[in-house]
Image (cartoon, rainbow, N blue to C red; front, side, top):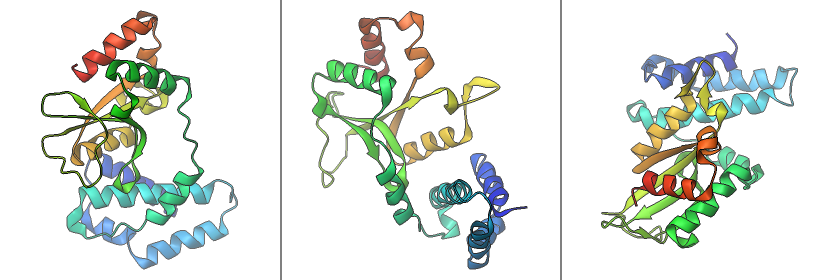
Amino acid sequence: MSGLSVVQACLALCYYKSIPEDLIDTVFCVKFIQRIEDEIHMCYSKATYPERVLNLIMQLNRTVCLDYPEANVPWFQQNYLEAQLSKKTKTQGKFGDDVKKLLAAVLSDESFFSCNHITPYGYQIDFVIHFDKSRKPIPVPAETTILDRITKVAILLLRLDSYCENDLTAMRGAEHLRTKHLEMMGYKVLHINEHDWNTRYMNSPQIKTNYLKCLLQI
């Protein structure tokens, strides 16, 4: 198997939390990393292959750190992650802009939510809202604030490619993993499906506003 195939197989096992510890030890060692570097150096498709492999290794490193802390694998992808984030566009497209506009109307103030929030280990959250103990939205607290009794809500916008091709109600492994890991980080995770958002049954701003109010329970 190629290094890419090994990493893909490991990540697939992680979706079911079934990766053996000896396989983690095999992948996260100097010998295997050297093998990956050699494959990248020798590959034909230098425009896409290296980026594909490195991104999957980052995902695997993140998953093992969060789901298998007993394996003692360090997080060594921060520099790679920051470089990738600096390349990404911050625009959300029509779907994201539409949700943002109506969220501002529902919450009455844009200071009550943040957009494109990046968590430790590099997960991106489309919108984050904080609620106090009375379920009232509050401005984004400073990092030093003690978040006791504050509810963190993460809203994830799901496109068609977030779902399995043969079952449009089942999220793909990577998306399911992101939801699980955000919950581990203390977020209450909510999803907005682009297909549902644009369906003919949600064809007016008022209907979408009511949908958001129900979703947020306000």
